[in-house]
Length: 278
Ligand SMILES: [Zn+2]
Image (cartoon, rainbow, N blue to C red; front, side, top):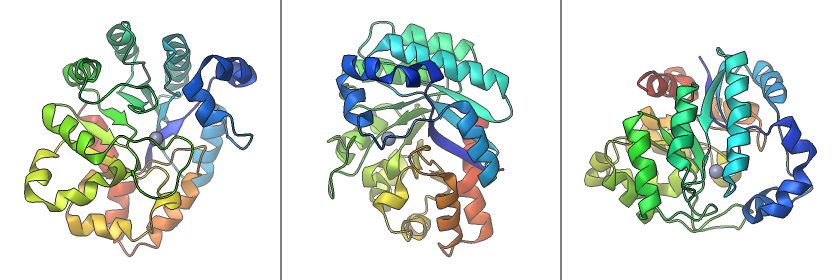
């Protein structure tokens, strides 16, 4: 069973009128204004999943500071998951600064959402030590919804969407809300390396890491390093499709020197376990 936990879909209506949305939303414009930016619908994703042998994808819209747009994204995601229940695990996006955040998470949960995210603390401007992040953590813990958060490395080359939320903040957030299941995207910006510290490994037990954008960021040896750190059971295949095709990750995984069993854990086994607990 191959599962991709990090995919972004846009409703066809939003893609058709994207200029209108980019004008209204500074953060979305920053990420999506490049003429090379790729948009995918559920149909595009299904075709790609079939091509690559991916059984299931956790599908997200695109989080922004426009709660109306988040809701529109969620409606599409929930509708697509209902149409393809064997293929899609729907995730809800929200604006944590919006007073309706909690209500929207409850609405999505009732309609079948199995997680929240990907949210961007930097781009959506909600500090991880703030009261909005606290409310978000509480509702996700209460409903047993894993929270997928964008955390990137704060060193190295710049790219659109690279924020300045640090591994310190990410670690402190996980420590403050131990009941919350967190998936830190993009290898948690390097937080995984600190799991070599026994106290951090203990404190980060409910933190998972996805591999989104890994081929752009890290040498493939990172998978073997994760094994050495002893956290392979918490590594989840996340592709950030349509940014990168799952094909590239699956090829890379075969070249890591990990055993077939270890590859299967990353490519689906860990995610199946995680989402079955929710
Ligand atoms: Zn991200």
